[in-house]
Amino acid sequence: MKYKVHRLDVRGSDMQEKLELYLQPVKGEVISIIPNVKPTFQLMGATARVNFLLVVEKVER
Image 1: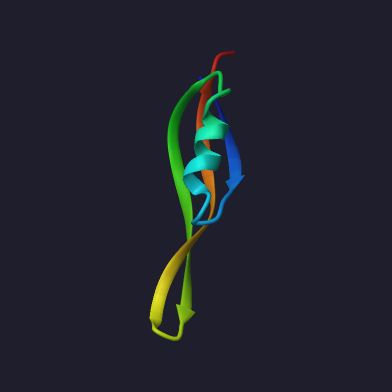
Image 2: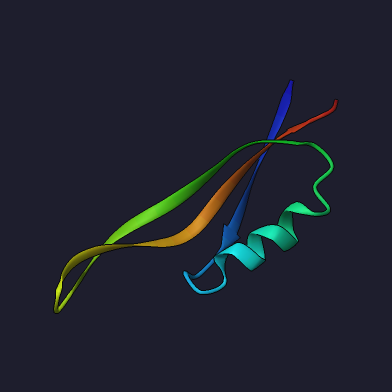
């Protein structure tokens, strides 16, 4: 088995749309989607933000 890992830069407001557009032409089987969560601090307290997604794809040889 062979795998490819793709990086998809996203923001909170456009994450779903970008992911849908990215997954449409994928030929292989999507194994996992892993968010990169970065902690941030704002005036109201601590929160988290997703910078990018890693998409793991299983491809045919």
